[in-house]
Image 1 (spheres, one colour):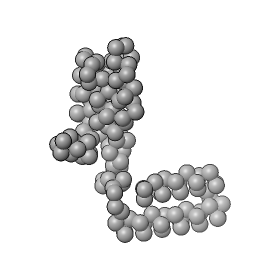
Image 2: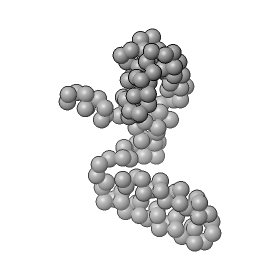
Image 3: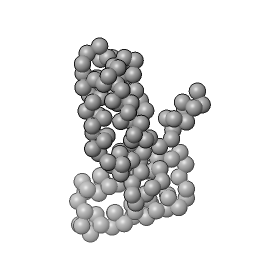
Image 4: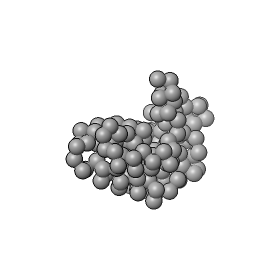
Length: 137
């Protein structure tokens, strides 16, 4: 059980996701959608499992495998690991360091100044504000 938790908590490997998705195209049951569980998308994993006796999961798994392959390591890490080139550390950690909170709060202040000066619309302000606040949660 501890190894399973470690597997799902560690950064996700693009190669593992591709291999499991390809295996799911060949053997739809019992591994249809396992790559979705591995990547932290349990709702999609359940949908794949519920449709295991149709060709839909096999086709979807093949499409997923090709997408992960074409996507590239950087985009894959950004989507599934929360890693970006400018921030190579996990964004959604349980506990933020005080420095990170200060940086986010300073970013919110600067964003508000841009809105007040009319350089950013209210809509853009709200989108950026939510992104910054999501990093805290």
